[in-house]
Length: 189
Image (cartoon, rainbow, N blue to C red; front, side, top):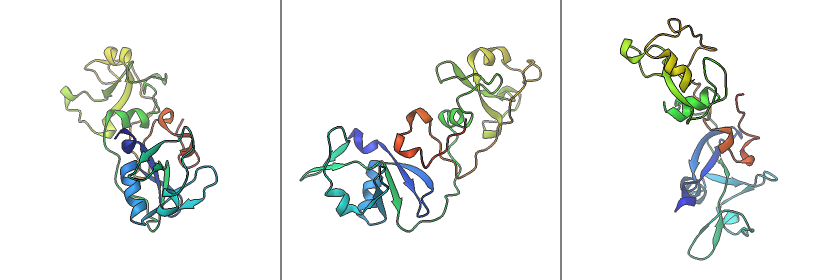
């Protein structure tokens, strides 16, 4: 069952990355002729029947159907949809880390979820809200120093103002991204 939850990059008809869904959803789109699987080596497109009949090579991920092993796609392209979705990514700790490039917003140092926190620029106790424009990644050391103060009161300066991400950005950590996706997703450094 784990393989069905693996991520699959969804491209619109114009080959623009618009979503990340799981294998189960991607296979459903393929079976309903709403998408084609993309071979990441040569960008050849496969409808469901063609994809289903491909041979699974050693080391390739697959799902077991009643009759055979079916290769798991890493990228699919939608047959008709050519728009870019308008929804904003969910406000989550992971997405804030991705938006801020896994860097402390006060020092610019590389951090990860074990040595950094999410900081309310204007502390909650002083009326600060839990919104994109008031949340930043902060090293634990800086966050303790800042405490219940504003950055100015703590002698800190934000390197860039936090903002709500544009709707068409895909949120993924570069380290989690399959190699085959890198031609379609540009990571902000």
